[in-house]
Image (cartoon, rainbow, N blue to C red; front, side, top):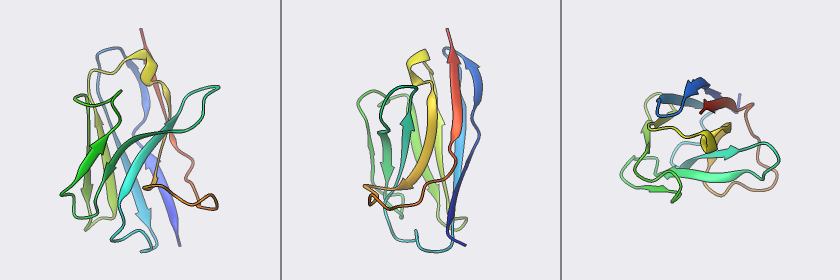
Amino acid sequence: QVQLVESGGGLVQAGGSLRLACVASGGVFRGLDMAWYRQAPGKEREFVARISWSGGQTHYADSVKGRFTISIDNAKDTVYLQMESLKPEDTAIYYCNVFAPASWAIWGQGTQVTVSS
């Protein structure tokens, strides 16, 4: 079954850390660049970080560079996002998917990250 299941979100104080995980099951994601996205209340979904399936190449949005680290365990079809020095403006629902997904792409339910000041 093709699906994306995100987990690891929660409530954390500013300056804290969280580690998100995304299981990309069904086999269709293998070999593709994967990415994390987020959507804050009242805003559009935005790109956060990208990684090649091999894990050799990564790219980050300027807003998270130096604080977030994306990684992949391709044996487990799982993409991670380690988030450090969290800020209130990082509060959002976080999703994973392929990089630049088509308009018809499926999305998981996401995982809520709330950072209190």
